[in-house]
Length: 473
Image 1: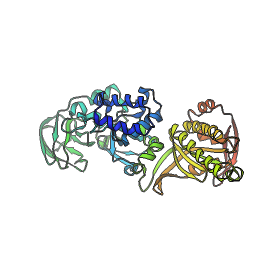
Image 2: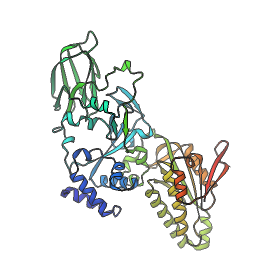
Image 3: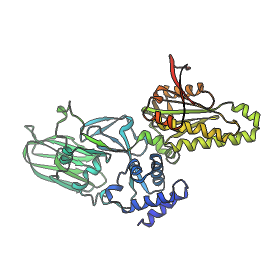
Image 4: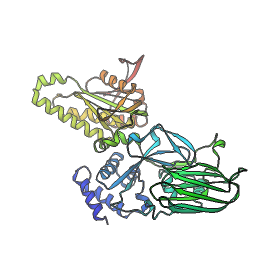
């Protein structure tokens, strides 16, 4: 049964009129009754698969619930070697080019799908024991905090991770833990999973100390690599931070020293669906509700591939002359509403309007083509008698997310090509490049929309050579 705090916050979501009441009721029951592990770092894409929602509908639900205080979301960079969930402050501004995984002792390069956004039920709605340093059980919960829930390791590594720790302890601010332990000639680690901090102990090296001190400060253990003598050892851990922490001392899950890791391979995992940073920033709801979090860092954020869609009304100036200013303005305004709704319905976001045109972004080409097909048909319906004729262009490729006029915008040759492709489209036609036409799922989207495709070539201003195009009608 949902608590009063949960019910009142869900009512805020309900008042938006964007989420069906039955969907909200089922979601509320799930958040109130599911085991704690299931409402910690949730994926809206996995929830979609379990509740018969489309991916865009589930993302919309989770974002609106977050805006209403039902959920909290966490941004993280995923380590490609061990799948550690390396948390960052919310928002694109906090994402840098590289992130450090102290468990693997490796730098993690930032790529399109290396950023995961996960959602946890908020503390006022439901207090989770697994999130509270006072009640966390290290042995049961350390993997839940350390690793992405979207990565399921193979059996061999799962067994390694599940080994009980040699010792574990909650350590308050300013407190010291003195651990006396007998070490075999192996590697050991102390892990603070909530803080994603790890220090490694090499007990095989001659000349190591029998008494060492390790300090935790500013999110890191110092030192990170420690030589200790096999046999009896005394290790002092000092929490120099201002918050309590939970740590465990265990056999090192990544047993190779950094010097021996030239050929270290990633842990075999099964990847479950998760919300990537790219997919989030191409969500219309995210752009509208989380303006501050949608701003990239000063240097921008590079995407390996993004799909951009440009539209424009053909002959809009003549339309004002033909039907009059008042009716033309009403038609153009309705056309913008239709475009915005169809972009959002297909998981994209309107980046900006330019006169009578829009620029929209999508994580993948297939939903962009599906949206374009619907736009063409719906705008013709709005402009009865052929008053509105839409030209559409699509291209996919690398680009940079930047802040422009206090909003998220995109820069690069991919943007230029997409705009130029729209410029050569005819009325009621969708023009796209090979990067879109040949992408997975696009053929199905074209057939579903009952479009015919004709190959063409065009010279685009500012683009070298002749560009192959596909005209969809």
